[in-house]
Structure formats: structure tokens, C-alpha cells
Image (cartoon, rainbow, N blue to C red; front, side, top):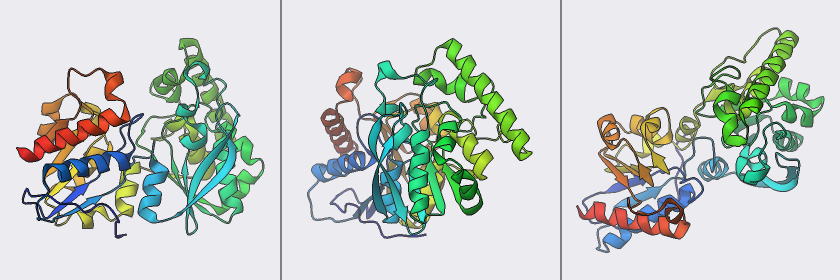
Length: 362
């Protein structure tokens, strides 16, 4: 689906006729929109001549932080605000999107780790109840199709909280609704590569909790398999968002897709970049994991015939990135700058602008 983008169109004198800027957020620092705008400002500040190539900014997300904003920007949907519960069952305001008969659910709006104070994080207690509240709210509005972003969760409850919030309605939702999961996580639910062993420590679990969470997940999967007659606990992505991926796969027959691919398809990215002279992408930190399905790597695959720059807050394995096909790999944070200082939004924005000015001056 090719949609007209209302992004920035600026001035540049480097011989480019069309530049696409499509960066992920710098997590905990700048949103995708803010990163894109800072890069575009760097181009503008470097040159104010009369040359006027088209420069388009595209909000991006891989299904985690910023997923709702990115999809609504692409799909021109309605933003819905509701009262719901966070992972510790505290009342909060949360948002989801509606586009025609499709809801855009970012699970981090309710079950997000960023909503929980570090000293309060405990995946033995954290619940996905609020995700169920968002889905139920959309269902009651008549929505029957869901795109669910599974990034940034504070939970490791296998979606049990979500199912409890739905009550008996989960059976109707199973019959009447379709779900597409936006996630780059490929882990199974249980075992050494499962949700608990890989991700729970990031959510506040100690070694004892990790084993308890894995045992709980395994038991829930066994009971569920007996009920349905099939077991999807080992399916790729079942371990996403503390096992929420499993709940959607097992209980709602969801389809899992890379979040970045979903968004790139929605905005008609392949058509947009056909005649682009330069594509700029990036993320908060780039290393070997960037090439394991993250947004910049997805854009690199789609832009095989374009010049592509990688612009990130920090960069490790620079030569690996260049060998993978990026034309330039740009670290915007000076090596001498402390991380705490670099993470300040105003500092990060200025670092981006300065780095881009230097690159266009080369």
C-alpha cells in the first residue's frame, strides 16, 4: 500500500534529488520523529542554497517503543485514550489506535517496563492485564482485526493476565478476530532460550525467579496444550513480551511477523525509495545484533540498489556494518562524552545535527 507521506521537505546542495530519512527511536532519549527531524535539520543547517531535493521523513518502529505513533503516522488512524492498568495494576491512561476496522495495540502502553520504577520491577508480580483491557475496549467498539506490537514489556506471565482481563469473552474474540504480531523476537516460550531465561533478568528477576517463571510457563503451556490439542510454546516468537507472544499464538491463532516489515509494507517503502538518491536509517546503538533483523538491516535489504547511511547514537563493529552494505556508518556521540550526558535529548539532538553537517561536508 503506497501512501503519501507528509514528511519534511528541505534544502540540500549535495547533488541529491530525493532523500529518505527512516530511523528508529533512540530508546530512552529521542523518538523516531525527533531523530528524523534532527537529521533533517543537520542537512538544512549545512546548506541553505536554492537547490531543493525532496527530503521525506518516515516514523519507524520494529514493534517496540514508538510502534503506535509510527503505525498511526503511516496509516492515518484515530488515537483512542482509555483508563487501564499498568503491570502492577495501577490505574494509568493508555492509548491505542484504530484504522478502519483494525486496532493498533502497543502492549508497552500498559504492560511496559518503562512505566515501572526500577526498584518496583518484579516479573513474578507483573501482569499483562492492561493489554486485555485495551483489546476488550477495541473489541467493544467493533474492531475485529488487531496489529499488536510486543516490545518493551515488564511482564513474564505468558499472557495469563491478558486472558483473565478478557474473562469468558476470550472465546468470542478467538472466533471473531484476527491478530498479527509485530515483533522481532524469535525465542520460544520455555527453556534456556525462552522468555524467562533470556529476558526476565532485565525485568527485575533474580536467578531463583527466572527458574520459577520458566517452570510456571512450562506448566501453563502443558495445561493449554491439553485443552486445545496442540502446543505452540516452541513456535518462533512465543517467548516475546514475557510469553504474550505464546498467548496470542496458542489462544488466538495469531500470525507473527517482523514489526519493521509490517510497517515498511504499510507505507509502501519499496515504491518510496525507487528514485531516492540517499536513504538514512539508524537506532540508538548499532552492533552485530543490528544485522539480526533490526530495522536498519530490514531497510538495508529493501534498499539494495540505494546508497544507505547508518546513523546511530553509538556504534560497535563498524567494519561489520560496512561489510554488510551500509555506505556510511556514523556515530553521533563523541567517544569522550559520558553516556548520561549523551542521553539528554537536547544533547543528542545537537550531536545528530553536528554529525550530519560533517557528513554532508565530506
